Structures are given as structure tokens and as C-alpha cells.
Length: 136
Ligand code: MN
View 1 (spheres, rainbow, N blue to C red):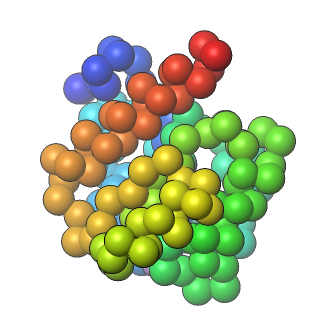
View 2: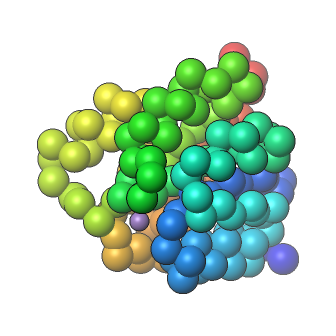
């Protein structure tokens, strides 16, 4: 089992309506030694994430019922999750989209289609951010 740069397994919560992508993200991060919970329904995400207490949240922007933008804002309003680093995943890569994602409160974003190495590196960056926030 590979562990992150810090040598510690982290808890990662993933919200993605596409079941194949969700399985891929979960499998990749589990293969890196992390404890992962996936959620396909954005409306359930805040409640389930609160119970899971993740170190990092990864979420899709294009989702039915509730957009990733709205979900980021809901996470940032939640007393338990508000400081948890968020990585957004989006098929749109326009500069305006990146700004909007960051303004909504995400810490980083990766565009689809996902390349695994940059994806894993971006998650590792958020783990380091999570640790710095926990120490602050
Ligand atoms: Mn989607």
C-alpha cells in the first residue's frame, strides 16, 4: 500500500454523479492508501460528508439537482466542513470557470478528462493544505 507524502492515510470524500468516474476516483485514491467514501447525489453530500469527517473533499461541478458551485457554497456554510479543502473537477477549463470555482470557495480544480498523475498530485496538495489548516 502506498501512502501519501506525509506517510499517513487520509479520509477523502468524493461527490460525482457519473458512476464510472466516481469508481475511478475512489479506486485510484484507495490504491494510494486513502480511506475514501463516494457519493453520487450532491443533495446527500453535506450530510454524508459531515458523518465521514473527511480531510479533503473532491466534487464534480456538473451535477443534476445541485451544481458543484452550490455544493461548494453549502460546504463553506457548514460549521463542521467549512475549513475542509475542496478540489473541484470540471469538464470546462475556461479561465472564467476557474475564477468562478475559486470564488465559490474551492481550493483547487482539475479539468476533465482526468489524467491520473496530475489528479493524484492535486489531491496530495490538498492533503498538505488540510494539515496546515489543522495546525493553524
Ligand atoms: Mn457530472
